[in-house]
Image (tube, rainbow, N blue to C red; front, side):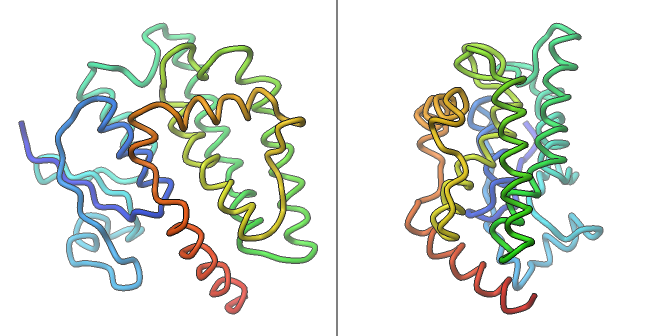
Length: 220
């Protein structure tokens, strides 16, 4: 098998998406931790356009952007698929992954802003979560049924980090009584062994994101 490297950052939800997928599929890889304040020559070589993580390097060839990497992994290693085999179900899954990608920026704006801008971001985040609660989950354990798939991985990279964002900014967004299905899904997802064993340490995340928020507000 060609050598596989994952260039990532431990605190990044996009990094975790790829790492979870690799673990779920049982694909061996080498992890390369990046310092985004001092980007390595390797990162600049393999992602010269955006200079961001994650980057998957397979046999010397780089693949960038977390969702594109997930699809690449699913096509290259079809065992333990992340997307459904049925074309319609696969299209539905891709729809929700794109929805999450398009809308998740509001959660990060809650973290990066204050005042009226933050209030709007909270409102947008609540609308995003309401849509997922009412239209995506149903009564299933995971988005695709009884097995973790690509939509879970995409959404999981938001929800676990959202808990930390809530604590850092002092605003509760994902309240159990407002989002019972999504709250139950969160617990199911985070308790799955491969996910649980590969979540960043919460205390370290709090320190990291508190510092990141201070820098973001200072530079605004």
